[in-house]
Image 1: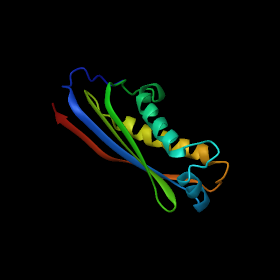
Image 2: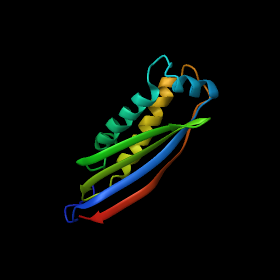
Image 3: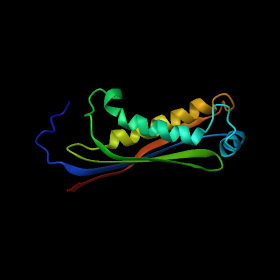
Length: 136
């Protein structure tokens, strides 16, 4: 791991996004909350939050961080679910990996919960959209 012991703790914020393309029937089942495995968006949101908290155990050289806030939002469009995450901490290193991990795992959870009814799903456009550090 990189030595961050000499850095001054700062407010760190990272936001990430990604989407999963879904067919019309799948979007309908998600909206109606009638997917066989349950509440797709609710489960995916919690999975994303849990994943952000586990980033250091998933990615070998990531620092374990004390995270102050994790927010995962999922919106449905006509052909996709768009996941956006925001992670906040006060620390010596950024939280972009946590934000990206939250998005990826939320998307994979949607995939898992919908795979029985939608064979055409595609996960794409995963990106970091903001990285901020401010003195505290």
